[in-house]
Length: 134
Image (cartoon, rainbow, N blue to C red; front, side, top):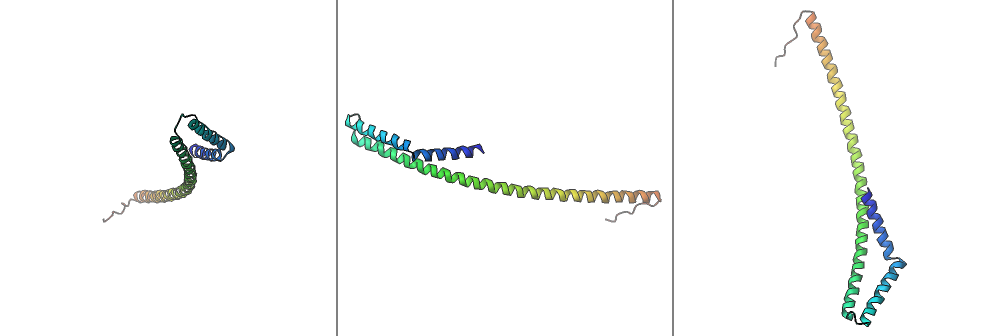
């Protein structure tokens, strides 16, 4: 299941990056640039706070999303395991049913051969086969 492994790798990579020193440095640089932009008059202080708040909310949402993806991956893994066990049980039952059908078919073929021999023997002896009264 390449999709499952890809999702796991992505979730782990995002989680590792958010808590990494690189992430701390990147966020620090962003904050410094935001405050410098206010100081130089490129952006209003209130707008800068709104932007930083939005970024912080996005990071929080990303962390929640990563946690949810991790939980989903675990759930999917459990479902796949359960499906495999169910499929194996279904296959075993199907195989047992097929074997029973083969045995029944062999029994019917044997009974038919006996009937054919009996009919041939009766015809050779000149006796007509018994008729059914149904």
